[in-house]
Image 1 (cartoon, helix red, strand yellow):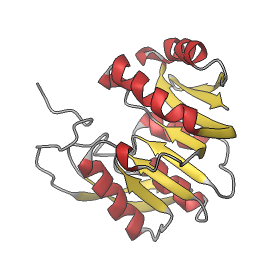
Image 2 (cartoon, one colour):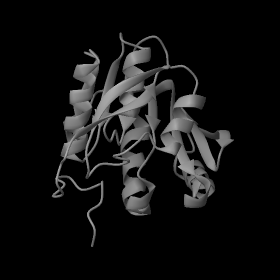
Image 3 (tube, one colour):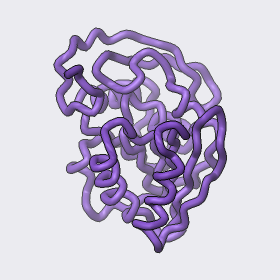
Length: 199
């Protein structure tokens, strides 16, 4: 079975390299490596998310769930340097890359953490995520049950999901599982849906 980017400790060769990607309106140099999600470029789903979500509030606690090498967390940090941005991933290599990239961009507000290392009392004003749909529904649903209830009142989560990977069924599941949250389709772009989940 081939290694998955959801692996906690990737065994594949790291082979770090630098690429240039558009983040927060400018092209920026970042470090990437194998064994993490989308190691060669800014993937299409994340691009759709970053181009179509509303601007985050000026400050607060923000969450990038499944940060990979960090494009979402880095964008949040660049847009809102006064915020605390939690970049969370089970993949140790992804966390290390995000930390390196945040440091190289001078983003002192980005906090990189494994899921269990985020303090239990932290609540989030914003969650932006390109969730790991391919890990399977059980893992995905556990992730969402863990993190969506941690939105502050009035906070919003934005999840980008490919239509052909079940965005519509995920929206129905969110409606069923979280009746106290308001789930709507924010937009649909190039085969991707952005779901907004509002507390």
